[in-house]
Length: 259
Image 1 (cartoon, rainbow, N blue to C red):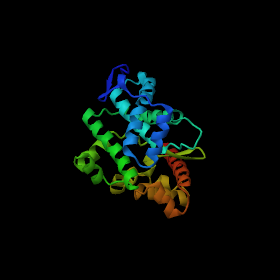
Image 2: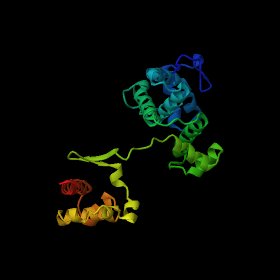
Image 3: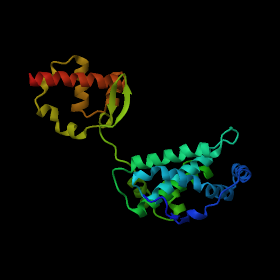
Image 4: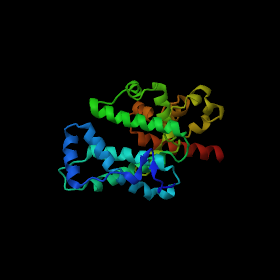
């Protein structure tokens, strides 16, 4: 990553404006009144802040243009959420917001490389979505975002999906008393339902070793392809309890089959 280059995303970083404190305060008053030009001026006046933050990620080996654009999104979020009544400097509030946005990007972007043009479309879509949300006080539809940008809604959806991070089936989504629930626990197993793979493995004898509740859970999960949440609703217990009972039942069945 080359943070010292002069032009980033078409912006000449050697000529970035620097706002004085009085100018910042005056602009923020206008921003609170809905002045879009004041907001743009305030953003430009704080791009040096974004530049200083992305230098901290020099070892990330990421394209500096990408980090700068993501940092700008963090800056805009900071501007939109900053409370001027608090006795805090804007830079103190904004830096963690900018860093958080960049860290999310690095986390979500570490496994798949997406083309530059698709990334640019995704960034435009994110910025436009936030702009329309503020303007209309509601989340815009994909069609509205696409119309604002001037591209098809299919391109918007494709671009946004392209920058999403794939999640492992073993990603923990909830922990209760040390028992983690994983993504795979939330997915209905349609293939298992159709092929009855449990029966094919001759586990009926092993299931006889279980008590009535464990037997019902295993049947619902692997014969009928229910999720743990669905099983919990049917039986009337928590999903965490279903998870513990399921794991215990599978351990008992495994011991029976390997004895």
